[in-house]
Image (tube, rainbow, N blue to C red; front, side, top):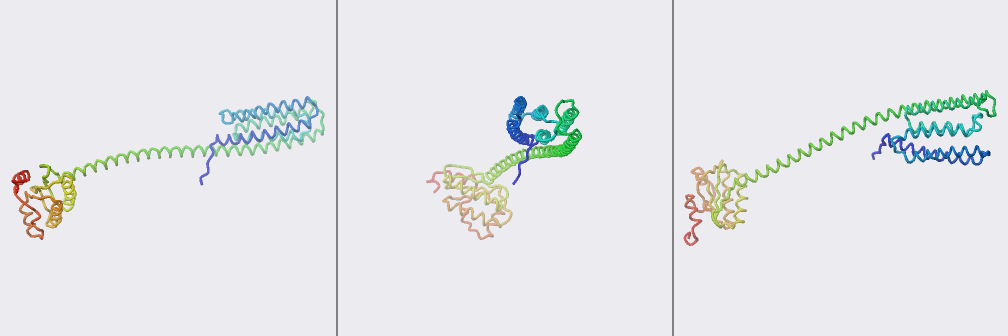
Length: 351
């Protein structure tokens, strides 16, 4: 069973959906923790203000997840999260606990979602700058907060955090490069498939055109065959019950078969009682066709039609004499004008 392949845009939308769910869970957990752990009302208010801003961005991410500007909105979401974490870090000089754990989570999530080298570098630089700057300012007293741990311990923790983040950044760069290669391969495959589909559509169009031409040719051939068959047995109606069949050309087995079908059908449809068979221009290839010709005359008589033959050459007569065909099936013979006058004469005179 074929597995559907997501396009790069669809894959990005799916990752953003996971980011939105993760961020909503994080906001809820931070809000619950701030409500129970932060005792100073002003600090609690600043935390919830920041969470409100993040919730607004999260909602915007959901509604604009298919927008062309969604990548920029993800970066803005990250910057806001970093700002909220830094500004609400009442114990930043401790460099431990939930705050700085979250600080490392959001850059990682952002880079995993975007998987773009440019975005990874922006997120990395901003994160690394904030990660180094604010703790150092707190450790060295530029930002006046009480130090819970000695400076050396805090510096060691800061170095560990920086190293961990650099490792994460390196992994994100590798993932970004791999994703770029995947997108390039996907684009190449898409181009190949598009070209193949175009070629297939052109081939189908050519095939349809060829089929139409073949159908038209087949129709012309069928019409031509019908005309040929009509020419092979050109029935001439002399009266309401008399017909004339002039036969010209080579009278082989195939042509006798065509004449057989055509003349019997016409005799039946026209209710013909008299048939004049004019063989003035007929040629026999050899005596082997005479039995088939005799069968034709016998079938005509079985339909109640009287046969009169004219125009037989001396060669045909000689071949008939030396065969076992009953010459009586040829009916009356004579000149064409005489036979036409006989079949057109009233019945009383004909007798």
